Picture (tube, rainbow, N blue to C red):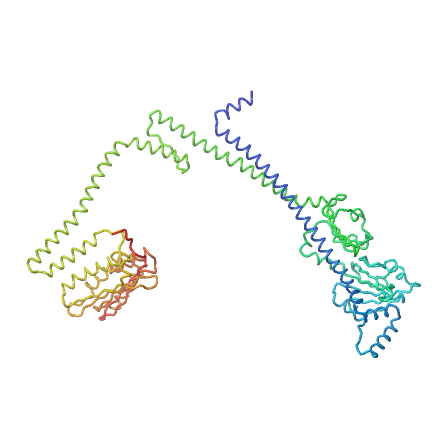
Length: 607
């Protein structure tokens, strides 16, 4: 009964709780499944990457030791290829060293060409390879070791079987291979400390094919680290180089040097790449000719540790995602439910006749828009009649204002036209022309156009100048220059006429007959440049400084409203690089340069 009560109380008639429960179940199942699959894929990728590192490390070490093995074999091949060097080497190993020296001297004096010296040949080999610690030629006939060390020294060490175990030890190791340094040989030559491995190859008489000795080369095993490259810090477990008998030639852990590897099952296993043997993941490569094996052994637990951190990270991320996936939607849906219940409560109040009720929800989501729509609907219901009457009255006022706006200018135009005709009928033709120019000028000012062009502005200037040309007759003239391609450019209205007005009011000298003002418009890069030049009174230096400061720091107290108005409007609309430049000299004239932006042609659809 208890679960039934919970269902009836929280779920049966509660759509939002059902949504929360369903969404939570889906989110939990999805996130856990996805996290598990992601962990499987990523852990496999981590293990695969680590095994690839182990494999690459083994290959690098194998390649390095193989290179050293091949270099020793190459030494003997070079000896056998050179007939004279072969003869000298055989003589050295089959006779005492004093006889070899006399033999070399005799051949040197009796033959025109000097033959290759065996001693010098092998000394050069030591010098050419910095990894060689010692190089030895063993003479089986004389039971002697000819030793070259990495310091360039050459020694002859007697190893007579009556006093040394070296002949017996080397007799047992006649086959060429890679092995650990022989203890008796190392003692005989006083081998330096440190891990090393030996590459041995037999030396035979080329004519009789009889074995006459051995070539032994000691390499520094610590140099194997350098062959691991970028993998040196990334591999796991331990990596060893083992001789055919199990002796350890190189060990990254440093545990088994000068010992026999205690896990022969790993070395003898048929597995070569990532197989488990005795709880260890084994990767190995065996060099058949050299008889050595490079072995990587990684404990399974250590390999698993590489993705333990990944597992923990995925678990934490999964937990965080579950919390967000459950808590965040729950909070959101609960808030949504509260707002919905508030709207339901409000609609019930309106249903009961309370048209003054309002929903206080200022959010812009769907519920906020519903609340706003309810409020707007109630406002419309309450003000419908009043709003209709006010709208009708406002419409009437608008129509009347529109008619007045059309009638008043036409009344003024008609009145000016009557005055002009009266002046012409009385013989005052100049007055008629002035009235005509004023009428057209006024019409251009009050007529609203979508865009104002340079042609419109220059025409307004011309009409204004015509008034004063008629007024002063032969005392005043003007010129205007503007390329046809620039007349359609859009410019600011009333941007040149105030400058001309300033000249008429303040600059023109009525006592002279050569008053002249010119307006020149040209294209200057991205600017349209209009230069207004006159030969009037000019501006005194102090006054010029005040006017320029008024342009730079305009305020309500500054003078020359016309120039300041043009300058401020251009800067406010188009930027600080546009505006007015003012130059003047008292008694000579004034030049005003206006920089407009090139806004292009006027829209042909506008008349």
